Structures are given as structure tokens and as C-alpha cells.
Amino acid sequence: MSQASTARRARKSPAERREEIALAAREIALADGLDAVTLRAVAARVGVAPGLVAHHADGMDALVAEAFGAVVAEELAAVVAAMRVTDAATTRLGILLDTVFGEEPNDVTLVWVQGWALGTRNEELAVRVRAEMGAWQRALAAEIDRGRERGEFGAIDADAIAWHLLAIIDGLGAQGLVRWRADPARTDLTRRALAALLGVAPEALRS
Image 1 (cartoon, rainbow, N blue to C red):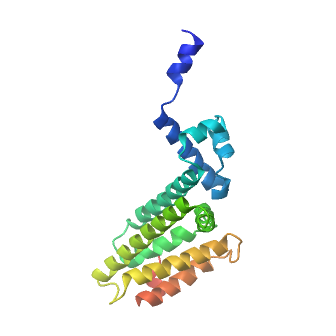
Image 2 (image 1 turned 180 degrees about the vertical axis):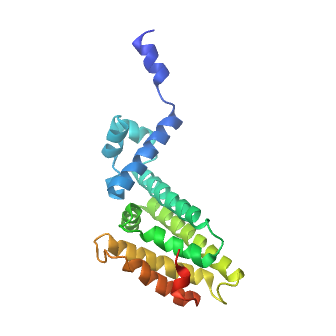
Image 3 (image 1 turned 135 degrees about the vertical axis):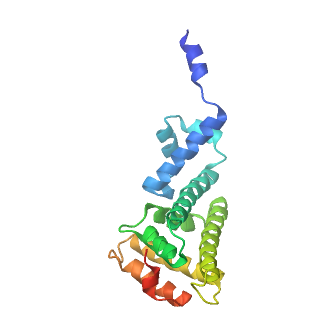
């Protein structure tokens, strides 16, 4: 069989190439930050010419937005899955705090911070950032509402507390990127604040 015939048979379909490009952008964002997702960087990771990436992508703004969404949606799915090991809402929220903070700053935190910053001049990214923030808020509110229905919390505003909790997580997470507080106090600070909002003892929010 000729080399030309082999090359034609090995050529990837447009859908396969787009998926490959999207995966490369996601990997770059997670490893080096969202601002590292450039045409040349994606092309180098895939092993193709930049022109081929430009041909298959719907523009770099859209590719960056897609990479952001893929990274943060995967994080939310992992957090939700981790919480489902128990029924108690208080314990599940404790698992949430331990998961999002951990011992070291989360690689996804940098993606979030850069998403907010880059979104000021990339409207497609801004739209995706708002959508993912909304997804996080709804997931937190649903968990808090579930605790209220189970009798673990009193008469509370689940939507408002979810936004409050998200703001705390985002703020302390961003500070952790520069080791503002490298100790485990971030989790304890958030646990005490959330306990006050929910009307429970801080110890109840331990995983």
C-alpha cells in the first residue's frame, strides 16, 4: 500500500480533530493556567500546525471558554460525587470544604481566577464563567435546601447562603494561590462562617 493511501486512511475526521484540540486546551489550562491556552501552545501539544487548529476551532476566545468550562465542570462533578458517600447534609458540606481547599492550592483555582480576569475582555469566556458560577451556586443551594428539608437546618435562605459560601471559597482559594495562608486555617475559617449562617455548631460540618 502506498504512503499516500496510508496517510489518507489515518487522517482524522473533523469531529475527532476538534475533540483532540479541545482536550489539549483543557490540559494546558489545568497544567499552566488559562492564559497559557494559545494557538501555538495547543498546536504544539497536538503536534499539528497552528493553521490546522485555527481551521477546526471556532476562534481562540471560544476555545479558551470551552477549556475553562470543561475544567471547572469536572471539578464540580468530582465534589458532588465525593459528597454522596453519606446522607447527612452537614457531613456532606464538611466533605465539600475539605475537598475544595485540601492541603495545597487547587490547580482549578488558578483557572477560575484567570477566568474572571480574562473574561473582562473575552465575552464568550465571561458567558461561560457566569454559567459555571451559577451551576456551583445551584449545587450548593440544593445541598443546603436538602439539609433544611431533613431538619438539619432551620428556616434559612439556601440561595443566599450558597452565594455567600461560594464567595468565601473563591476569595480564600484565590488568596491561597500566593500562599497568603498556607496553613489549614482556610477550611476552619469557612467552616465557622458557614456554621453561623446555617445555625449549627462548627463541629457538625466536619467530614
